[in-house]
Image (cartoon, rainbow, N blue to C red):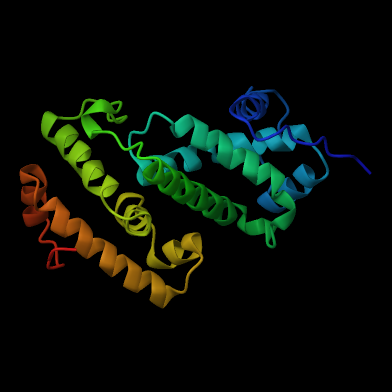
Length: 225
């Protein structure tokens, strides 16, 4: 039986090393392999399969990180952390055919940890100090609205921010939000309603967002959180 090589310790240097090993576009990767077979290959210790996992889902994970954290300079570290955790925890995948959903859950959990840790350490910075979001040829109005949106999100609780971002930025269905956050559908509905109300209340303080809310005929009455 093949022996899986232990992953390196969980340090920034180790995370970079792991992702760098996964990233090269080596020929012969099983691009057409199903997720279920891919999980089996990773469990057997195949580095090629580990590389396929990264190739197949790093775009999905990067998009989720953007939706949850915004234009964050530490996003690459978060990406590294997520794939290291995925490889370390691959044996816990109960239904290998739902690998993408499982990886989404890890991404949400890791992002929530990052938000809590950043808040506790008071690392929040003004949005204007962060890198510009990856919007190609965006108008000044769109860029300003994006900055204001993540300014509002950064002032919300970790839970509200995650539920709102998954639903309204990432565009997930409510059932997908519930699955990603490991809560019941009814709990997801309640948490999302609270998050939406809190976002609207804060967003109305920004002139550029007030006009967007009005044009979109936002249904929630935004009272003070």
